[in-house]
Image (cartoon, rainbow, N blue to C red):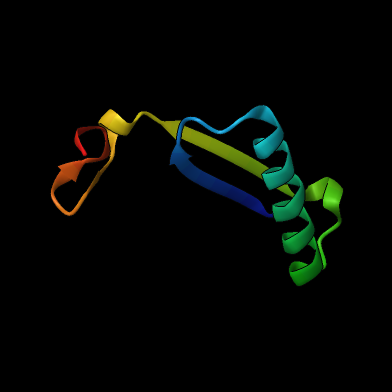
Length: 61
């Protein structure tokens, strides 16, 4: 059973996350030949306060 974890900053709509799960599931199923029913997608959202790029928190930019 493939398990995919996606980490991203919070702020996407439910519809965007729904579409993301659907498209990732399709891609994983197609490439691994696993049935869609066996593909799990986990979305982990984080606050911009908890993520930094180039030495700066995203929330500070």
